[in-house]
Image (cartoon, rainbow, N blue to C red):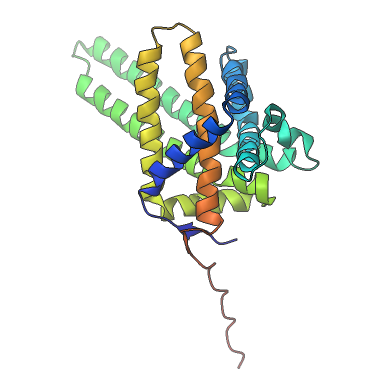
Length: 259
């Protein structure tokens, strides 16, 4: 299925339309988001569980968003739709691979950077010279840039792949590859949506920090619900027609003429 291209401003619409969709049935969406927030608060195991099962659970939110958008009611049980629909869980679990691989790469880079910093500090101490803080700071900048690039790639590989596998039954690896291409083709909307969502999350996080635990749970519950609905709306616009200008699939290669 070919994807389309939308204006950068649509990134704001993905967010505002998602908020509107959540407000149509706040009880169901916020409880689904709260379940994800509670899982995330479980030390170590919660983060690991969301890394593996997160795409399947977000897929459940996407499914609920479609139900609500098409005039049916979103239900809390929709969160676990991928676990209930025969043959759906396996493909959805494969969508966690970018996060696992990206996390492993970041861990290795952090370890290499940390070992390098320790060795540099040890050598400086042994020689009586000052530690090169400029080099250390430069290394941190490089690590941060690599982390942002890896995070962007993970985000782009999963963004459209989750609704495509959940709602279309697309093949996971092909869906991830095309999701990356669709995000690059719609880089303006994709980045604008992500930046506004992060800024809103940080601002609300500062405000809700005065309400220990409950404030963060409320923020993560709302954030998860809005993000799941936004993925559905973005998929609908980029893959489902509407205002997207269709981009045809690449033309097949022409076989060489036989002599």
